[in-house]
Length: 350
Image (spheres, rainbow, N blue to C red):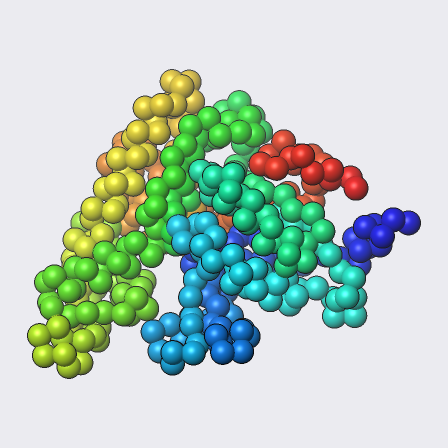
C-alpha cells in the first residue's frame, strides 16, 4: 500500500467554508462539527495561539499590546497567510482522530469566492495543505450553496443564488453545473456593521465598537418598511466628552444606515440579470432567487429584494450552513464532482 493511501485510511475527509466572519467544518459521515467565528488571538511575544473562534472574538478590542485578535480573511480572501494557516490547523486538528493524529491527512474541499485571483486561490490552497490536508479541492461558494440547498444545478434550467456572507456578496446564475453570469461585491455583514457604526457616529456623536454594532443589527436590523419597529440600547464613547454614553436606537435607524449597501446589492443583481441569456432569465423569473449566507437572515431582506427586482426571493433553510453542507454533499462522490472544482488538475483517485 502506498504511504499516501495509508494516510488516507486513517483520515476523515473534510469540507470547509472559510469565511470572513465564520468558519464551518463538515466531516464526512458526521456532519457539521465546527461553526466558529474566523478570529484568532495570538500572543506576539511567544508566537502562540491564545484563542480561536468564539473565545477569540470576545477579545476583539479588549486585548493588551502583546495579544492581537484578528480576522485572517478580508472580503473572503486570505489577508494574513500565517494566521489563516494556524486557524485552519487548529480546526482540522479538532476533527481528526487523536489516535492517528500523526498520520491522518484528510482530503479537503474548501469553498472560496468566485472572483479570487490565481494568487489568492493559491494562498488558500497552500494554507490548507500546510494545515495538514493530503489533497485540496476548491469550489466556488455559490455552487456549494446551491448544492447545499439541493438546487438541481446539473440540469439546463437557470437558477440564481445570492450568497451574502461576512465579507462578500456573490451573485451567480447557475446552469449545467456551471456559472453563467456572476458578480462578487465587497459588501457583506461586516460592511453593514460599519454602516451602523458610521450612522450612529454621524447622527448621535457616539462611537460604537464593531461587536456592539453587530449585536444591534442582529437584534433589530431591518430592510423593509413593513417590518415591525424594534428598539435596543447601545453603549459607546461620546465623541464630544470622551465619556461612555448609552442611547436607544431603533429599526428605522438600522434601515437608514444600511440602505445604501442594500441598494448596491439590488443594482448588481439587476446588472447580472441583464447579462444573463433570456431563456435563463425566464427560468429565474418562474423559480425565483435563493438567498444564502449568514446575512441572508437580516429581517425583510428577501422582501426588499423581491420588490426592488420584481422576482420572488426566498431564504433557503439554515442559510449560514448552506455552503458547508454543499461541500459535505460533494465529499460523498469526489470523482463525480470533478468538473465543479476550480483546481480540477488533482488526481482524485490517488
